[in-house]
Length: 332
Image (cartoon, rainbow, N blue to C red; front, side, top):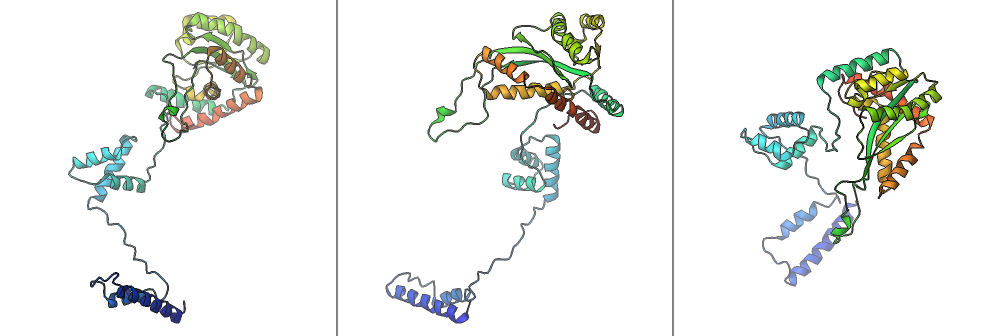
């Protein structure tokens, strides 16, 4: 900015201030003419001087605090800043909650949703890793496998979010049955499509005899039609699957099974089918048992051979992850 123009503006402001002083306004003797002049001189260049940045000084216990934060979240990732403060106070270190939150963010911790997974015992971790490693080495593509399992589907109208207007708290309330209606289902998928779906009442207990009747009615016809009888059944280690009665029936029917590691639902693609089915049903806002069955059948009809092949194609990818994690849970 031109200095002459800046000085002209300064003198104009001085004239206004002098007139206000003559009227008795802002007649504070603590604010002198020299103070005003120095203040205006600072802006002759039309720039505001920024205060030099001074970084926040770390606490004398900085190393101890960050080490405690790391130790706390390595042991329990759900710990709160208040709990961390409490642990530090027992050691004679007093810091604010906001300081803990700031250091926690600087260390790279971010808040996220919790993902729950199934429990895997150590002995089964080894079995999972060995199984996946062997399948990967053999280049198994599971083209002759039929992945089967049971699941329970119930009427679920729960939603995670809703929109309400301020002052109307009742619009966010939803009714929920104490014991919602449910059904048991059995099904299987292979690279050549899906088996016939079995739907059983929610009060039915699936024991060995019931399970074998399902196989006789749904599995055997599909295996003969789609695989000419040359297929292997994949099932988990539920009691009705591994009982003596079921084992004898499988031998009688000439059904070959692929031994699957225990506690490994993350490797079976049918589990992903069940999860997607339940998400689909939840969006339909089902209110009664008949509508629930209709939605189940409607979703099952969408399982074309191409869709089933996409589910099965992901098995090898998950096996690689399990092998890398040495049999532990994987992030899907």
